[in-house]
Length: 394
Image 1 (tube, rainbow, N blue to C red):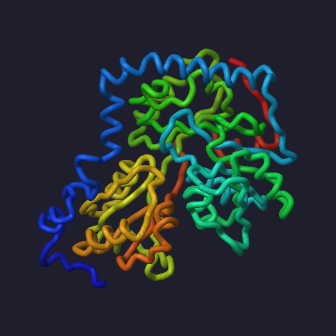
Image 2: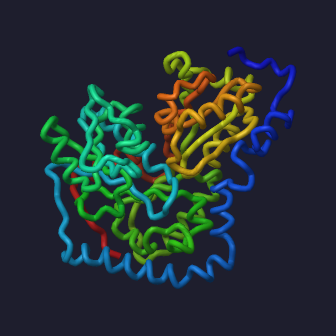
């Protein structure tokens, strides 16, 4: 399908949008846009007041549950290899899985053989599933979850999926030797002991939703950050935003954890109609694109694309982990007929690939860098792995 030249009908023509029942500003029906409705709900004063008792009860139960691990009433399992946990205090996207992808590639450059352990959120297959490096049999994403499938698809790493991660490790270890384990979304998974505990905090959530569920997005109270070995701040737009969160964290009594700034940017861009051939950013800037994403924070994805100079004609954001099937792909094909094609995420392509879209789909990767800090994160991480688990008291 040829790329539009800019002549003829475009996204400014409301006819085909109205026919399909779409809002011109977003291909998701305006009356049911889930992300915006959730944000409005969490910001509403009546919601905060009405859910305050529930947040108190949730916080109390969460504290009791974690205290049982702290005092040894609940036992932990220690693996024979170092474990690096990547987690968050907040529900929603803070960049955990992309950071696990970065760590997997980083450890491979150092000569390690990493293993990623994942819960397999929303995967329908019970028990333990694992995907080896040779990719001889990659399970359907519906069986293991879209994020483990994304890891297996895009990173040269073995992925083991199971509700009990220690059981998943035991199965994978029967088939291969690993010298470091990466625990995806592991901060709340206390059954598995870890050598290094990394907590990612996305700056927008810290600024707006620093309240316990269901009143806000906190999974557990803020003082539980004492379990973390380091905090990594993500998704800030300006240095002042990072500095504000750093000041908040340093108000905690005897705060001695290092704080790192993580900066995500878009790229590389892979043309899936041409077997994943890289596309220069300059080429994308010449066209108009529809952006679709089923991630926890689609707004950041769209903002990053626009910041890169890409003309986003329309967006179709759907709930995190939403499936892709023939009906959704067909709808996307209709929507993109007046644009150059579709820009989407690594996670979305894993789910829509089997439907063989006829439209041009560009998969957008994520690059990761570290902002100014007194410490070099890779050097700090290697030192902590050599030193072993150490817990600093507040």
